[in-house]
Image 1: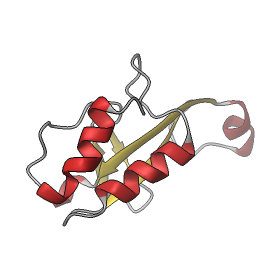
Image 2: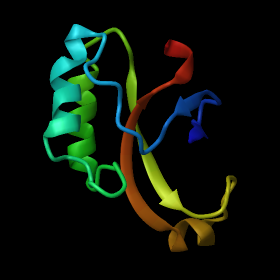
Image 3: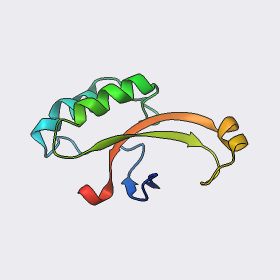
Length: 102
């Protein structure tokens, strides 16, 4: 799945497991935490809590690439109305780097 970010760039693979092991030594602890640390839901590969997503994002941002938190919801394509945002089912969070960085 490819999703557009607010800044117009694309994220690759929301809800996918990142490549393991990482090619970036500074990201190794964060990737280990994501793959083996129990932070993701086993059915969706999404992170259920914003706190866990923030901790993981901070761990991954030690390398050369910049990672961001993505809020995932089930709803209509953008731009949503306020009502659609209120009734959209939250699915969790993901961490991704923008596609142009790799």
